[in-house]
Image (cartoon, rainbow, N blue to C red; front, side, top):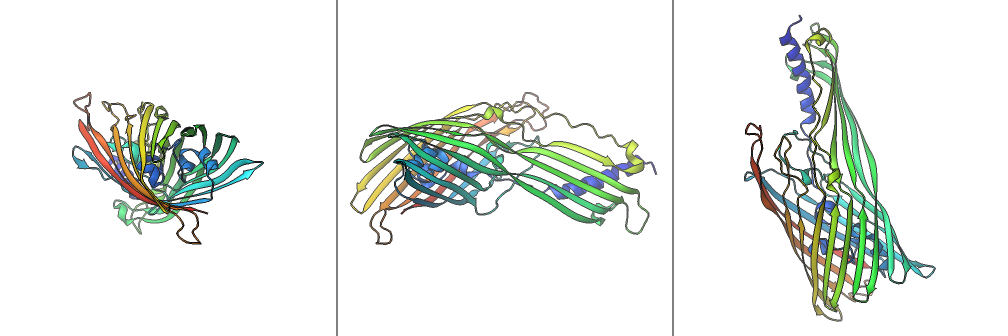
Length: 450
C-alpha cells in the first residue's frame, strides 16, 4: 500500500475539494475611496476639503457640518464602469454602484454652532465581496484591493471661535474571519464521489478608524480647510478543513481519519492614511474656485497575496509527503503620493426661485506602485480625472417644502496613462505587458433642507 502514486492521488483529492470551496472568491472597488461621495463633490474632482456644502462633508471634512444653518438630508446614487486592460484585453474589473445618503443636524449650544450627523454608502449588489488571485497574476491592485463594502461615518462638529470650526468622528468598515469544515468521506480515486457534510462559520468584525477636520474662514471670500482620515488594513482570515476517511463507498478506506487544513491570511482591503489641505475662493457672487492637495501614505501597503499554511495527516502515507514551507512574499515597495485637485463652480443664472450651477474639476493621481520588474505584478497607472456637473437650486416649491431643494448630477472620466511593465528576467513566467484603460463615472444627488 505504500505507493507514492496513491499518496499523490489522496493529496489531489483533498486539493480538489479545497479548490471547489475557494474558486468563487471575487472582488469589488470601493466607490467612496475610489470615486468620491456625492454628485457635487464628484463633479469638482474631490476638491472639497474647504468647498463642501452638502453631506459629502461627512467624508471630506466633518468640521464643515457645524457651519450649516439647516437640517439637511442628502440622497444620491453613483455608478462607475471600469474598462481596464492588460495587453489590450479587458481584465473584467467590476462596476461599482450604490446609494449615498447623509444626515446633518446643526444647532447651537452656549451660543456656538454644534452639529451631529453621518454619511452612508450602501452598495446595491453586495455588502461585502473579495477576490483572491494567484500571487503572480497581474491585477489592478488599487481597485482589486478596495472591495465594495458598506461604509458608515458618524461625526460631531462644533464652532470654537467666530471663524473657526472643528469636527471629527469615526468611520466603520468590516473585516472577515471564517472557516469551512467538510466532514465525512473523501472519495478516492474520484473526489466527486465524496460524501461530506458542510459547516461554515463566518464572523464580520468591525474596524473603526478616525477622521477629523478644521475649517477656517480667513476672509468673507476665502475658506481654508484641513482634514485627516486614518489608514487601515482589512485582513481576510480563512480556514478550510477536510476531515474523514479516504476511499470508495462501501469498501475499506484507504486512509482512516484523514485530515487536511489550509489556513490563508491575506490583506483584503487597504486604505492609506490621508491628510488634505484645501481652499475655496469666492471670486464673485457667481464664480468659485477650489483647490486641494492630498497626501496619501501608500508606503504602508503590504503584499496582498495570501500567506498559506498547510497541515496534512494521511495516515500511513505521511512519510511519503513533504510539504515545503511557503516562501516569503516579496515586498510591495509602494510610495507615498501627493494628489492635486482643482475645480470651478459657476452660477450663470440666479433668479429669485431658481439658481443654475455649472461645475468642472480635474485631479492628477500619480501611481504609488513602482515599476513591476520582478516577481510581483501589481498593475497601476498614473490617473487623470476630468469631471463635469450641473445643479439647480429650487426655492419656495410649496408650503411643505419651504426651504430650497438642490438637485445635482455629474459625469467623470478617469484615464489611466499607458504604462509598460518590462521584466528584468527574460525567463519571467509572466513576461512583459502593457496596461491602460479608463473609468466612466456618473451620478445624481438631491439635498433637502428643513
